[in-house]
Length: 446
Image (cartoon, rainbow, N blue to C red; front, side, top):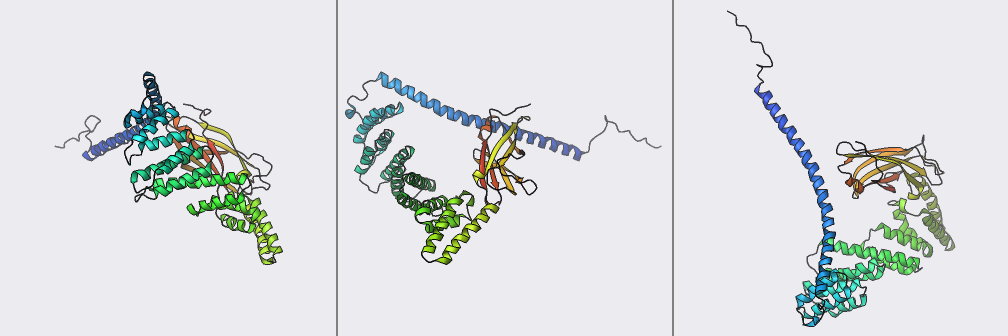
């Protein structure tokens, strides 16, 4: 007797074990990935809120501290009475109260009294007094206080003098007295070098302060016409930063009138490194002056070399270099449309040629940065032989730039910037524009 085969239906179908196992793992994997995405979004949002709250809390705490200090001082009007008879810790606390409310003169009195009672090798009161004197711009008194303490091999003393000189230098720098700032930064470096174990970040921070101060100071001195002094300070910078191209360029500019041949020595290596930042007119004028000097001195071969150099530089600039002032960049439109929980960025940008020759080949890198960190780059051809960028300041057609990067919150958009680098040769890219995301005008559509 033949058995009739049982008909398989949706009610009696039994899945194979392997298929059940696959479906189970697929479900677990999808659930895991979904949980990861949700957790990431929530953690980013929580981080942003935490940072925001942290800054708000710091400012709020300062206000609270000031209010409490004011209330305490008002209820104890005789804080400075018999200050010399009060303990060291009490004097420090009183000074801190007055410092909190910004009454530096009374804080100075309290810290001076604390300093007199300080134990040997305890420089807490000394440092606080230095800060108070600097806030009042009493630089002479601060310097006298530092010079009164004799140097000896003590870590606390070295730390105190290092920090104090940095504080004084920072204040000088903030009010535009750059050379005075540089001298104090050098003093800070002198004391910091006495430490056997040094932090590279601290050492570099002091060195950068010295470099920036001397460079700013040199700029101010040049404006007053003291070029020789400016050269002296820039050469000091060279000792700290021998490969600093900005220093070499400044030296070339300053020496272009008084010593054109020496100026050329500074300009020449920069042509292969940062030609887009060199003032071609100043360089060529220095070459012409150097050629005339060489002719007068009978060095005809050198004179020919200088004149030929002018011609080769002219060709090099036309073929390879874009100057910032050659290009005008206009943000035509900027749209940020909300898609689900993200904000894709899209911009339409136009270019105009402000130079004196047509630009027949040029590219541009559109670099999206977040908190000054590059996160995405889009490269586009702006001009070619068929579509040159003509002179006259006429705007090109708009170039639509769509970034794949998506902001997760509208608040984050405030930290986005589009940096635009134009170039004929990708070795010499010129930053021609920085466009901040216009958050107040962006378009939102759900």
